[in-house]
Every structure is written in structure tokens, then in C-alpha cells.
Length: 381
Image (tube, rainbow, N blue to C red):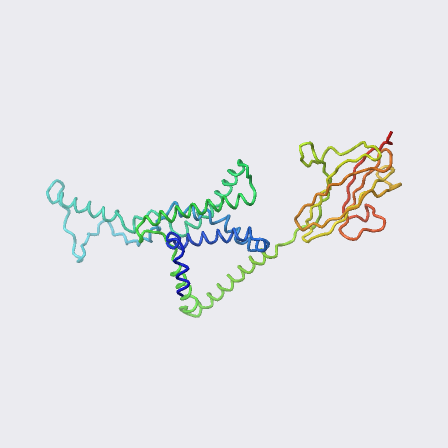
């Protein structure tokens, strides 16, 4: 116990004085940063769990806390309205004396007393708090978070960093922590009885009473049903995060070229070449198979004949073959140098993609994906 207290005293005084709800916001923000940047943890469902709270709740809650440091007004008890013709009575139950005649000394004295009573009724104290209650804070926290995060992203879009993971995480974290600092300072400036605080102990005590000391058997049964429902809901959400449903399994296979500016474009493919001439192409493979996959690409130069809608391969020559392994949801670009080995008009350069063993005679019918280019190859002079 002494060691824990000694470690606690090492922290700066503002950190030790930080209200519990604001300390929780800081802690969740730091945990989110860890789940995003730590190499092993960022591949677990914890990243999704903390990321959702970080984006949808924490910035808005910190902003609301900075705007409303005061506690919300307590519930006001409603007094039964008396009928207009019912005589007013004083504290002893006696009927009030008649109101004085306006303009007399008694009327002036009564007005002064009434004005003082009015000031006391509408002056300071709990009834005059301008804060908001817990439900309003939660609702505003979700709404403002949904508004704040896109605005921060819009600002980042006009900076050199752009809308990327690291700038977004750092910007939202910085905004949240600044709001926490402002909220803490504004609360410390208020009297202690006017500061907003989350009644954790009251909630825990109430929950213990409801769960372990119910009024009757019906309440006990309802409590058991409530606890089981919460466990089922939490388990369902956890399972959905840990084991997301798989969508359609497929692989994208495409060819690109590099523009003079260095951009990859689906244009400017070679149409006329000479035997021995080279052309640089980019072979793109995007894995959406929900598992790491080993691919093999076979490049063939084919002479074909066309009759109607039927295309027949007369001769095929393998130009190249290469393989690569791509993880799920990743894209691999392989730079390939095309070099025809024979001349001919309207030759077809065929790219065949395999995700398993390559047969002895690769064809489009046995390939997983395929694509092609048409090129005229001339004899070299």
C-alpha cells in the first residue's frame, strides 16, 4: 500500500487532482494510441473496440466537459397548486393577513420583503445551476464527436500530412487532451459542490443492492434476466469484432503502366513493338481471399485466329513466370519487363494468374484470373 501511495505521489499535482471522468478520458485515449501503434496489439480486436470509443465518444465528451463544468440542476419537486380562491396560510397554518393597501407604509415594507424573498428563491444555490445532466452529456458527446472528427479530417486535408491514420490519431488525441485540460481548469475554478462529477459510487451501491438484496423474488428474477441479457449482448459484440463475417472472396488482377510523372495509370499500353524490344508494365494483385495466398503469374505470347466469337490459340510461347505471396487485404505490384521473342501481327500477350499449382500446359481455362494485351511485333532491321 505504501509503494502504491508513493507512486501516486510521484505524479504531478494537476494529474492527481484530475476528476475521475476526465482521467478516464485520458486513460482511454492513451490505450487507443497503444492499440494502434504497438506492433502486436494493433492486429487484435482491441484496436477496433478502443477505436470506436475514441472516434464516436471521447472527443465529444471532452468538448462538452469543457463547455459545461457545472453539475446539472437537481430534480425540482412540484408543489400542488392551490385554487385561486383558497386563502394563503403561513407556517403555523393560520390564514395570512390581508395584503396591505397599495401606497401605504405597510405596502412598501411588504414589497421589500417580497423582493428579498424572490432574490433568495432565484439567486445562487443548486436550483440556479446552468449545467446539463448526465443523459444530455452522453447524447451531446456522441453527436459532437460525429461532427468534430470529420471537421478535423477536413482541416488535415488542406495540410501536407493529409487524411491518413497517424495524422488523424494525433490530431483527435491532441484535441481531446486539450479539451480535458480546459475542462479540468474550469471545474477547479468552481466551488466543490457545483462541480460536475459522475456518481460512480452511487451507481455501484445501487447495483449491489438491486443484484444482491432485491425487494422480492420478481425483482431477483428480473435482475438475473438483465445480467444474462447484458452478457449475451457483450458477447455478441465481442464475437462480431473478433470474428467479422467474411464477404465475397476474390482476387483483383490488373495491368498498369507508369506515366512520365511516376503515376500508375491504366493507359499507354504498348501496341507496336519490335523483336527484342522491351516495355515496362506493372502487374497488380489485390488479395481479398481472407487468407494469405501464394500466387504465380505466367506470361505467354500467343498467336490466335478468330472466327466469329470464337478465338483459337494456334501457338503459345512462355515469356516469363514469377510468383509472390500476398496477405489478405493487401496489394502487390510487380514490375514486369515485356520482351517479345517473335514477330507477327495482332499477337496476344496473355497474363495467367494461379493461386495453386500451375499445370504443365497453362491455359486461360485452368487459370484463376487472366488478362491480355494485343500487340503487333515487327522484325528488327
